[in-house]
Image 1 (cartoon, one colour):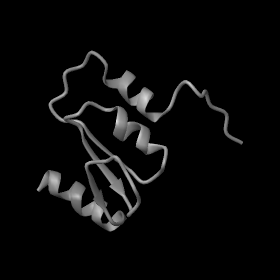
Image 2: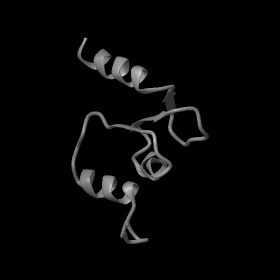
Image 3: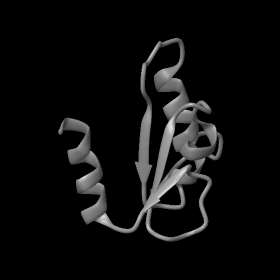
Image 4: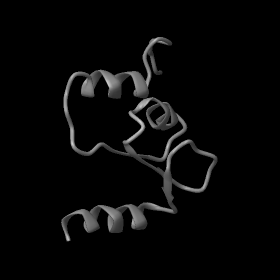
Length: 77
């Protein structure tokens, strides 16, 4: 069972978390349809990545979790 408010979704929660903060870099990655709310609601300069080949509003996509690992590894290389 899942109980949630129709007024709050991942995009709302993400924006509330970053509200009034000055981040140099915002990175959002997800594989679920509910992640689309974050992709849509985050600031325009946020880097958004969809995992899997589906219609998305994310700016980028990777095919699978192996590519996610490679992408994240490139951040520290």
